Image 1 (cartoon, rainbow, N blue to C red):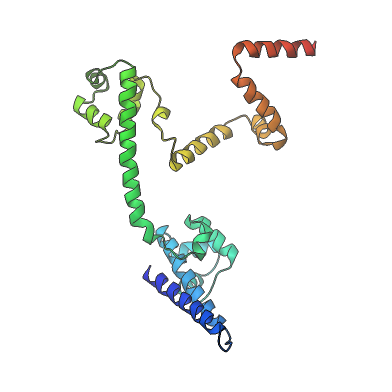
Image 2: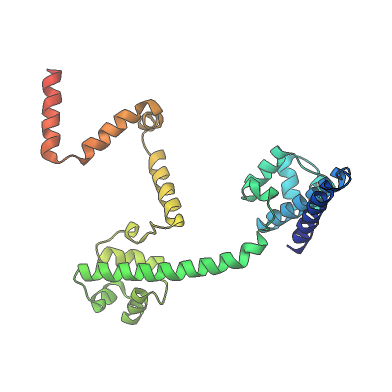
Length: 252
């Protein structure tokens, strides 16, 4: 990170110097030095992304069908890749391509991400515990009853419900059945992570559909028919029967 900050500072100083010289005698801008600094910065960001993804120089070289020495020269800033090469690297190293023209390394965010992950898991443990207690109470069950059936101690169940201890999935799947809930009941649905998980589940269900239905739903020309189907699905049964009778009369 210090290398990147040093390069960025030197680029900033060069720009400021150029601005100061505008009012005086005009001097030619040193494009060569600017390109060299940009190459160095790009190299630092490439190496940072590669190490963060636990990939070797040889791995990246095989991906791009080039010599490892060329990838190494990119990371040292002695040579520069093209945009298509960067796009492939971004995909392979699991970073947005914009990472390569930023000024922040992934390592600099690592400690913050670790803290955020820890806080997220602690919060989720408390939320799952609260949902479990709510489901147990709605089912009219005591802790001792669940403990006896699931072969889990009452003390452990109390810790689970308070969010003091994370519930192992093997136990959560059994306990959720006892309180008449499926595992979806405990899933995160409100945060960014929850939204991504929901989209992934919806996409999985979509790909499991019959190919003909999938093709129909994916065709933008059929959006109007899908909206009509949604409207029908929300109608009370009595109104739906009337609509069906009306369609039948038209057809006859």
